[in-house]
Length: 358
Image (cartoon, rainbow, N blue to C red; front, side, top):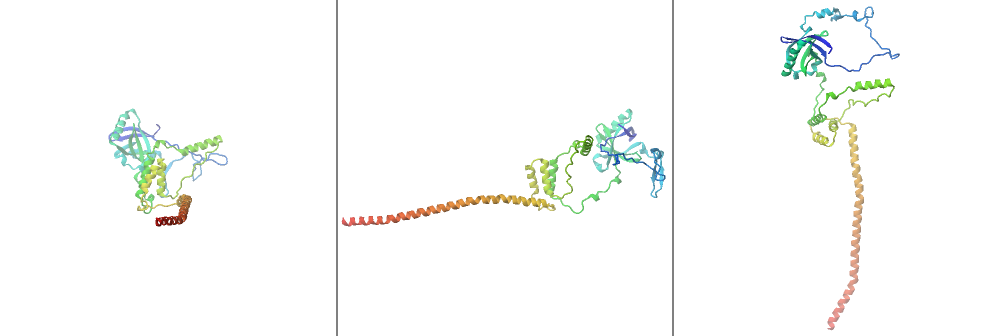
C-alpha cells in the first residue's frame, strides 16, 4: 500500500503510529488532446505573465491572493511550521453513531494501517472497541495543504478513515425542491411500492462501467480497421407520460409475467379518477390507441351482427314455410269436408225412407 500520509492516531492517551493509503482507485477513460492536422500531442507550458518566460517546476512557488489583489508568498517551510496539532496527528475527540452520519458529508476513503509492529496491538484494540460500540471516531488532520474532518470506522480487519465535507460546505436543497403543490394518490404510491418489490434488491457488485468498455471496443476496432460498434438506442429523454400507465407497464416488465401484475395494477387503479390529487397527463398517442381499440372492439360486433342476419332469415323462412304448410293443410281438409257432405245427406235420407217403410 502506497502511503499518502503518515503520523499518529491519538485515542485518548493511546497514540498509534499509522499511515494512510488510498482505499479506492479510478478506471476513468483518459483522452489526450491532439493537433488534428498531424496528431501531435498538445502540451501546456507554464509561463510568467510578466516576462513570458517558460517556467519549470523548480521555478514555481505558491502565494495567497488577498481581496485587494496582493500576492503573499507562502513557502513549504511556512506551512510545515504552522502551529497545528493536526499536521502529524489525527486527534480523536468524539464519537458518533455510524447511522447518524449524513451521507452527503462522506468524501474520500483511506485505509488506516499500523506503520510499525509496535502499533499492531493498540490498532487492533481501537478496531475492536469501535466494532463493539457500533460507533465511529471523529477527528481532524492536515494533509495536502488542507485540514480535513475525518470519520474512522472498523471494516473487517482494518480501520477506514473517511474524509468528511465540512458542514458549511453542504449546499441547501431548497433549490431542488419541486415548485408548487404536487399531490400523489394512494393508488400511485401502491403501484410504486409494487414496482420496488418487483425490481428487488440491487447487487452493486454486478454493475460495470459500460462506457469504458465501449470506448475500449471502439479503440480496438479503429486499430484493427474493423467495423465500428453501432450506436445504441437513444435515451428516454424528458417525455411526458401517463404516470399510472407507466407504473403498470413497469410492474409487468419487472415481474416478467402479466396476470398477477395486471391484477395488482387493476386493484390499485380502482377509484383512481376519484382519488384526490391523482392527476396525470394523457398523451395524444394514448388517445389514438384508445380510439383504435374501441374501433377494433366494434368491428367484431358488426361482423357478429352480420353473421346473425342469415340465421334470422332462416328462421323467418322457416316460419313462412310452416305457415304455408298449415294453410295448405286447412284448405285440403275443407275440400274433403265439402265432398263428404252430399254423401252424408244421401245416406241420412235413405235411412229415413227405410224406417217409414217398416
